[in-house]
Length: 337
Image 1: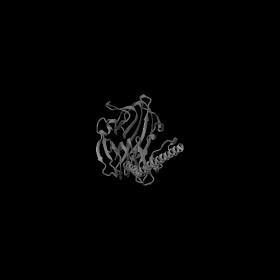
Image 2 (image 1 turned 90 degrees about the horizontal axis):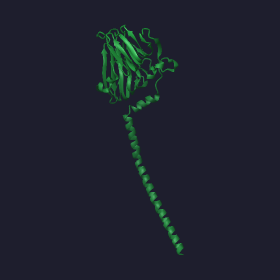
Image 3 (image 1 turned 180 degrees about the horizontal axis):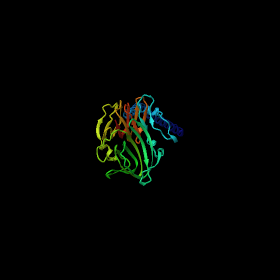
Image 4 (image 1 turned 60 degrees about the vertical axis):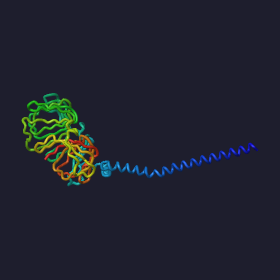
């Protein structure tokens, strides 16, 4: 009997302990679930708040997302041979004034057309190749490559040329023997009327802009080549112009520096921080090469292009559209009247 009593007591104790344990677990689970249910709206709100903050700080996320999703419009013009990329001249509306855009790959050396050896070479065996991009009125753009060598250039230039050096090293010598060495990242200006000598020490690859204008505007004798090194285009060497008054999103702040302003040709550097702004009836044709940054350009007809460092763009006189800068942009520009 005593054993049975002890066994019943043990069973009751175990049942009581299990009941107490289940009760404690139930309370704990209930409290945790209550906490989760109570805190869930706060977490959802936090996520929505964070997402809204990202959307409000992103570069026009709704507008730009729509641009990204629609993809680039089909480029006009015939396709290049060999599957080479073609410049994008968007013209959905045949009456619209639209920009021309080419990525860096459009100017890759294997896409350039060989021109053969230079007939007047007196040093080495320089041979070259080129590819045009577009001509708009008196200005044209394209790319050029040339192997090492040298040659005289005694005839006065019939146009003003501005070029940006992708790679290679060379030297331009004025008529009086003044030498101007240039290399990757440098901007070179050869005013109309310049003559002298070319010497290429390492194969040159460049993007060029040529302005055909009637008169020789530079008055110095001799007319000199002008070299601007990349470091001179650093932000601290540009003059701040403040926030654009016509900004429609963000606070796009610009800085610039003019490198050459003679007659109808102007050359300079420009930078702009993230934000959006319109351009209405552009007063002159502008060609530019993107040195840094990321942005969208949108024509008045809604066609758009995502642009990055290495791209080349031509905005014709009368162009109307919109800039949406995602990452601070720095460009080398040429404006012609």
